[in-house]
Length: 411
Image (cartoon, rainbow, N blue to C red; front, top):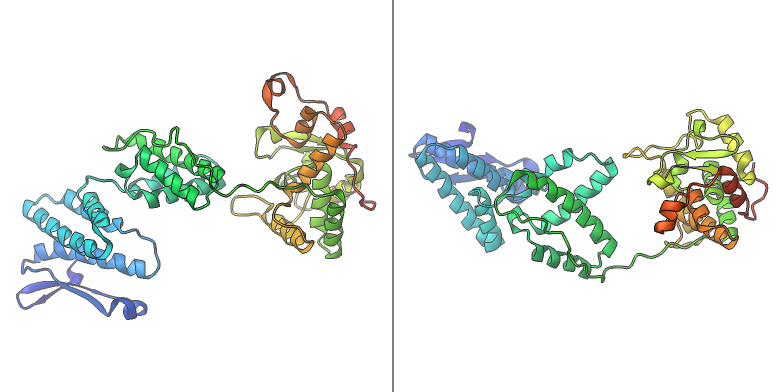
């Protein structure tokens, strides 16, 4: 800390040089008297002044440090300081900081800063990173949980401020901003996971289960239902992809149309899981999605070509792998650009191919339980879950052959 102290006459001053890029905003140097000629005491005061200045520098750089980060440092320094006089000095510096905060940010934040520094309130930053690191769910889900919990933390910076009424009012506010009911349910799911983790630590003043039985106002944006493509629209998309020499995309469209499989299921299919007659989908978002799907006679030539030409072990070759290990992101983006160019809006996406296949099977008189086995849906109701066993591949094949599109001969 000696580097941050300068003695001028009888008193020590805390000093910190500002990086050149920030001097127009913050000035050349931070300088403030510690008010004492005692170097030990001056060092304690300077440590807190410098910590606050460094926080300002990080915030000026655009780094989101949170104003309570400095309060946490105060708390740590006060707790470890054994000398009563030096503790009094730290608390005096703290009161000065709180006074400055009250003038610049208001009483509520100033009080919150003081309570955290004195250990009577607990900021989430003490636990958030450890909670996130111990999650054993998929990376994609963990990232979504963390993003949702951060929204919650922005509303409730300290743990002791969370209560059921406050949570309900917060969710009402999200509804008023247009956040859908489904999105709110997703946010609550992540928050419950986080709160369950916090309950291990017996934090004084922490309420139990503030997210239970909350009533959600259904005023947010309604989820727009996806629409199926018409059969001729699917053929038009396939033709456009072929015309643009996007052969892998064209193959993907044909496979999606004749299987109803999800885009990631198709993009992650490996050659070893595909025979001449059957797709064995072993990587799906649900347990019901793990299934055998008969290969429609119209796409067998495509399957043979893809199997024969594969160099990387995947049926659809050379796809970019995303940050979460998925192989469908690039193809999903390419399909989105293609369908927009074809004049389709946001209600029609790759998943709409799945809707088209299901609609076609329904219109052909195929039983609902059989359709669920083909596309990997959960079977609904007691009858579906208990009595309807998986149907044979031959029964599925009879059903899938009822699907037809006005494609030219596929090769």
